[in-house]
Length: 369
Image (cartoon, rainbow, N blue to C red; front, side, top):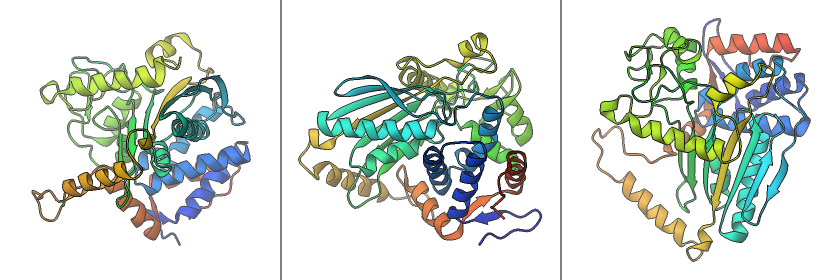
């Protein structure tokens, strides 16, 4: 059961969060099976502790829906295909259904060819890249995911105004004894959604995440949120934070991600799109999904065995703080998933108010409380 007072954090069972997302998507007219896939990916994202990309994204999705940009009946359509490649059109739908389709198609092809790439065009936001990389790992393949972005939030190294998005990438590899190795990251120092979460919780933003137009760090959460989402100057720093801390590497990675998830598949580049498209045009995002079949390179089970041994060595590293053992990518998310399946998904009061308002506007039942 969820627990709450007027200003307390709700702790909501995953099943109820799933039902709430479904109720809202159905109230918008989304097709039953497409809504089911979308809700599943969004809840999995919240279970993994990626609060910025789960149920809290309904605020953004509602805005796209009310603007008339979303085609909630759109189904993935293969428009070009080879033995190890495919290009899929998302039909201006939400990115979750097409991304599940594309990652599974990439794995299907990689089982036959050893390696496969599926690109997606004409899509919208797809949530967290890591949930799709995990699909590959669950099926025994190595998965890599990148995506173009709608927003313009990253200030390039040496710049004063944002040009790139948070441009996420994810990589997952299956082990045998251990959970998969899963790297899921923005190429900014932090994802824009993380700043949103800090604002929703009225928590100061760590120094180095957000800069103003003069390059100074912004820590007040609501001001930081304004710099990321509303102001023409300032924004998120590239991974690294400052030139002295090698922010040029994050800047370069962001462009690499866009080349794979945007340029390669014919998707839009945010600064150009914002100058050339109308407010009613779909976001036109692109995604990139790659799958590698370890069986094409190693005898069965050898890859997973060796990855287990490497992960064990990393976790056995003597920690600087004995109370905080060394982890590998994916460990915090696995721990969050176990904890949240047991205790519920946290929904802060500000987000709960937003969800209530979305339900009222769309005629959906409010189910969180």
